[in-house]
Each structure stands twice: as C-alpha cells, then as structure tokens.
Length: 331
Image (cartoon, rainbow, N blue to C red; front, top):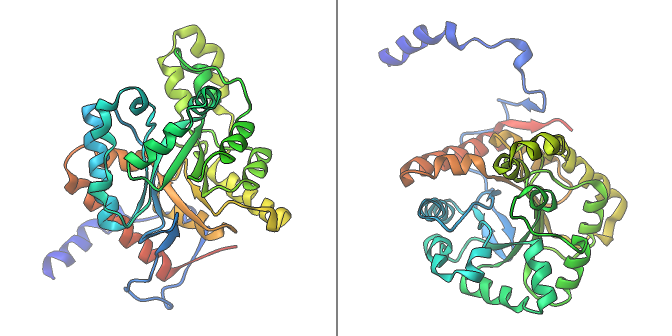
C-alpha cells in the first residue's frame, strides 16, 4: 500500500486532464454498476461469440502471415471472437499455402470463421462457371461461410489489378441464386454509400462489414505501390468514402425506411475503430444487430509471441465489461 500511495503522489501532476477532453458520447454512472461480468455473447452464423468483436480479414501466403493468422485464431478460440480470413485467392491457384489459412483446428468449432474472396475473382468464376470451387474452399477450410470483398478502387490503383466488368450488386445477386453459403459483403477501407447499403440490405446476407474510411485503406496501400505520377493523380480519391459513424447512422435511417424488406442478419462495424469505446458506442446505437471489427490493432499485437496478443484481448474483454457496467450511451 505504501508503494501505491507513493505512486499516487509521484503521478498526480502528470495525470491531470483538461475538461475539454471529455468523451461526450457517454454518461458515466458510477452508482449503477459493479465489477462483475455480464453476458456479452452474440449469435453470428449459427455460432456463439463470447464477445461482440470481429477480427477483420488479415493476410496469407507468407511465413509471417501464417504466424499472424495462427496467433489470431488462438485468441479467437480462447476469448470467443469471430474471424475473417484474408483473401483466399492464392489457395485457388497455389494450395501449398493452405497451412497459412488452416486455422480452424486452432480456434476450435465454437466460433465463426469466414473465408474471403474478391469481387473480381467472383466475376471471373461466374463467367467460367467455376463458382463451385468456392464451396470446396469453404469446406476445406471448415469455415462457416464466405466473405466477398468489394474493392473496385483498390483494383483500379493496383498495378496488376483486375478489371471489373459487371456492377458488384449484379454479381452478388447472381451468386446468391447459385449458393447456399452464408455470405458477408465487405469493403476494404472506403466504406459503402447510402444507395449501396440500401441495395445490400435487401439481399439475404449474413452480414455487411463496413470496411469504412478511417482505418487501413487498401486503395492507398496499392497507390503507395504505384509509380509517382499515378500516386499524384489518383491521391484525391483516397479521401473519398464513408466513416463507420456515418455508415451506422445511414444504416439506422434505412432500417426506419425499409423495415421488413431488410434481409441482412447483422452488421460488422469496422474501419477506423481505434478503441473499444469506438466499437462499443457504434454497436450500442445501431438499430441492427451489430458487432465491431478491428484489423490493424489486432495485427499490431499478433506479430510476435502469443502472450502479447493474449494480454491485449484480455484487456479488451475487461474494458467491454467496464463499459457495459458503468457507461450509458447518450442517444
């Protein structure tokens, strides 16, 4: 106790906050909660997640990526999180990378896992009538479904990018007629506008994942790989898009207007979710069943030993309990 009191004295002046630093999204209610655990479980794709947190799609095809995926899978299994794999396109051509993506034996069967393919690859497979390979891919990975990432801007900026010939909404409708897989549709860093969301909400999807502006932007990733003139000309496009906050409010407006016409089960609020309170706030105000996804934060903590990632997720879990017990969202 003496050491703790000494710390209080030493740190008192460096721990001052200005009144203008208050997070005005919440009322803090210290009289109304306890230091106890609430049930934060969430049903997703017929599985039960213990925390409403989605590990957004990462990567594969390199030794480093394999380590990252295995660490993330172990955390998902231990703490009950859902996980989306990075693009599995490489597995369609190079099955020797399968071990990088084979995380189901690590995470166990209790939590949801989704494979991932790009909309351009789906277009090519529909043209070739080879979309059945996606069912085989999902089955081989023991996944619960398939995430389809929508990335026309990224493909346009990627030096070796594919050319999209059909609007993604038409491709999705065609594919949904041919498959029984549970489907997530996600963006990759710029989010979806109101009309895109309206049309997506009318499709029988397991979830829409925002991939909103403010997080890792894969269009910018590709632009940074491009030659200097392309980077100069196309750079303004990087600032076009929709934030997670904006998209959540847009979804809420569409819920009020569309009602029973909505066929999507859930939303995954991702893109620019830099703290658990960002995710907590947006999932609380969402009028649709919602979980939140974090990509770069998990990536940062998953590159080394598992202990570092384990400690991070444990603190996320404790923080969510604190938020649920002592915070009330201002509506």
